[in-house]
Length: 286
Image (cartoon, rainbow, N blue to C red; front, side, top):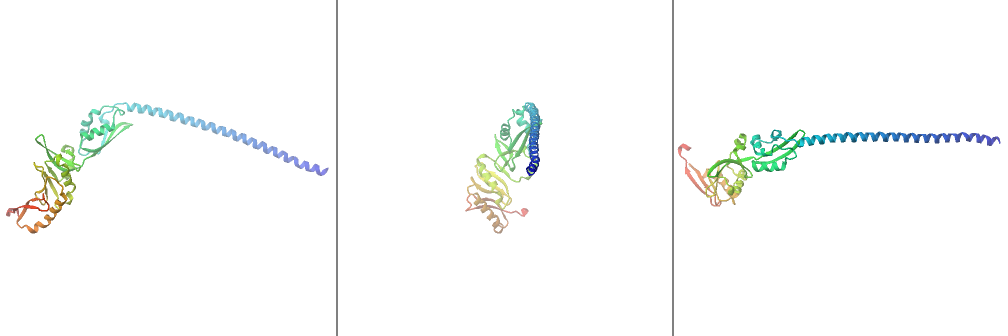
């Protein structure tokens, strides 16, 4: 009996400890649940506050955008970059009919097409800015490669052309660019455009720098170089490279063949049979 009593007395504390552990675990679960609910409530209020803040900000921005977008702007609110020869006044005169208008009414693509059509420019990009309301124009001007003259209504008009053969009035070219150009084209016309451009694109093959291209009333082409006063090429440029090579050969050999004479005209219409017209050098020219 004493032995069983001792065993029972030893087992009772174990039951008590188990109950306490269960109670503690239960209290912990309740505490964790409460903390989780508190956290969820805080997260909800934070998200609600963020929603209200961003909604309010969006409404303000939409209001400002709408107010600015529908407000008419003038040319003075136009920012221009990329110009050298063309002036801001030229731009103002050209697109004055687009102002005053609000930003939403202005069509950048329409203005771009109009400017390219009216002015000798290669490209222009246009963007709208709402804060503050502005129009931004960025130009790429055409680069002149030669002076040119042409007949318009029985009058001679002077201008310049670029490497694509686009006519550029002198008023749209800066003095700095004019001073760099050493080539001129006499009697420029669209019928001979491709021939002239072919000569210009191959000018660096010439050993004697190109100075002038001439188109005769009969539409025949001749060139003037630093070494030759007149080189006849004919009415087309089908054999241009061959003609240039022959001219380079002549430039190299003529000084040793001609004494007290100078070449006045080189006829290269048939580069296989070049003809020379020479004249005596006077004593005053030596």
